[in-house]
Length: 340
Image 1 (tube, rainbow, N blue to C red):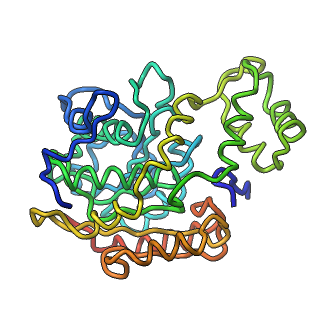
Image 2 (cartoon, rainbow, N blue to C red):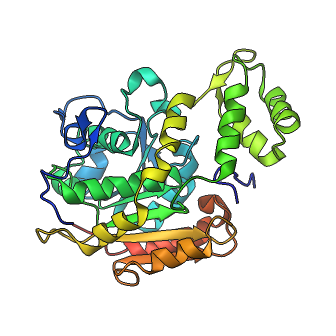
């Protein structure tokens, strides 16, 4: 199953583990001065008791815990509304914070984000969003959940917090939804190249759909999904995502040491900090889950203890669409007792 294809229906000191990126260390990226009165870096929405809200005050005032949701490549926060609504209805002690990652949705636009466009920078964006919202210290998110690209960013988020001092606490649980380790599926490159070749502005969604199907040999479901990612009025449509940023983020896939990070996170930190568990959800119909990848993950020493793998047999890559009820139940079972 394509990474992009939806269905329409611990070792070193915290201060020493700094990864230099384009002259700027990971420590610098994640510890720039963040004012509690500054504007959140990323576009966001809250979901509480199954309803969309824009204010964090009810969460803090009602002593609710927060789970952060991160969408996949070329998506946006609204993609995860349904599981977030279902989850917060069944677990009223939880509220969901849905974020548009850099270059996507309401967080689109290269002018909003300085390079490099990598997972470390995405984590910094999250920090620069949680702090102004007051989700620090005891109010820090208790869990984070990401789909596909979002799962990789969620993994980086937890790994960074566990290995560095920060006002934001390490989440108790990290949920990774169908993020396959290693290089992306070839279909991702095909889609990105096709989108890049489309001249702007775009006349209308139907024309774009026909072009993607006839000239780029995409099936109708993928073509219609891509055409849904347009903004602007008729005859003057543009993409809701930033293609340059999307391409740079994809370039980071092969560099992420997925298995090693899972091992470090689930083994706990050297200073005895709270262990964090990882729940990896695999789509049963995603053919990218090769036997060697699954075997490698199951060989991680913490597998079956603080690292768990789940398979939703009838789901494609968009597990939160194909198997939303099964996914929600998994998360309800796992998050029922998460309280700081």
